[in-house]
Length: 627
Image 1: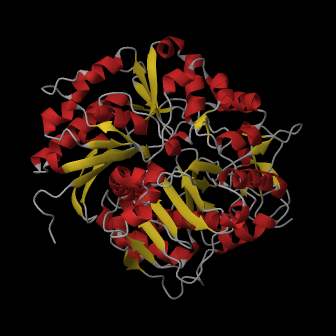
Image 2: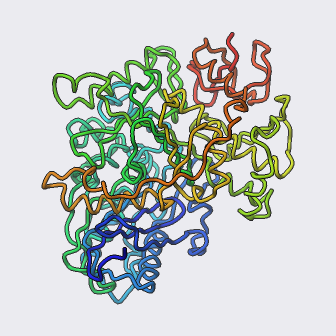
């Protein structure tokens, strides 16, 4: 049934790595409009690849701030031309790629207050940023600042107790510290620092928007128990940083009415509310409405696996973020990434980490459990820990697109045909495609293996297509199982992101996870979650729960079921790796590359990060065969 002509609408936006997207829903939670702007294709003057600039050191990764602003101009113009009546939009919210930062120049607040509706935003704001290229989540150049922060906080585990995470290069606080040290003049000219999410909200608000608790949890700066900035972390990062950040607010907060600029230029109602924007991962969780036993896979620039675990294995380092839809609760994020320990102190450091010692993992999970307690009694027990787990992988859609371009004539139709024409298991051929430094495992390079587990320089085009998709999903499942995921009756795989519209890719996903795959009607759960949050924000103060607000949302749609022989064909290589996760590690240098034989002369295997006493540049891996 179509919406009534004047029925209220709710706008959700997502400022992601490669594009700016929008979804509009009505009061019955039906999608009535969607639109987007692709940065590379529609804003070629900024010369980005995949929406970013990767610098010559291959560690520094940034995006032009004005590209994001101009994308909003284009997006709203598109929506207006399509006939969307902005006067019906009662509330709007959005999300941004997590950890990225925007540095506003002195005087920018006055510019935001007096925007001329006869001019484009990107023209009005062209001189409003002290740093023209924003650090984004793909950046891993702040190792020294991570070490400094952990030392100031009393160690990695103490930092995790305060902020929910030990220090990560991509986290905003460490990026701020690096910029203050390396670009002092620009930092001195900064009036306000926003996350990508609060930056986008600021544009709509006509003033600086507060950072919300949930996205603020990914900065290594927020004390997630008090929900205020940690004084220890602020002092270790930059002087007077609290003034540059502003006070954080609950993720359900209504920040104020939309700026008069949007009222006069696009016809928004003066009463349209701007609800706090949040990070893309929290927004995606809101959009997917996960249930116990579900696993959700977001197939985007980075592939992200979301899990709901009742008993997570206490062997991994993790994050605890403030929950974006329930103010008094948390979401726990266990990132399966790389670690090393200092020989003398046993403290953790490095970019992304996994703990291989159960004692260390237990200590961190115990700290996380303490942080999620809301009171005495049963709430204090670990089994009451509402645990959402996220594993993220940098090499996602961009890697699949490169293989598509090289092996399928840049055609998704031919790419899909190659998946249909090759068998489950790919005759034993597999590949690991790490074109940028991966989070899990921390390696870079492309490695292809034939059915004899011998590394080869190339595969046939069709085999290569299946190798990249099957290899990626096998990796995702392996890490999910190490986090405690297992198939239970009723388990569903919920697929979202751009690639979730490709049924052949989803069939491989179903076969690898040996579970049915569902999609929501919209491929982008992040935008949808933002639209849901816009609606919820209007009633949250009255006590309405998010669950009640979205109960009318359509159920996910079944799109793929596993092949009857899927369980039999699972790659033995990954079974061996999984079994070895409990074995005593045998170390070898990453510099020896994945295909070389380990010191114990075991056959070629895919190795996992292990505890080590070496520096980041000398990371060691453990052999997947029990020694």
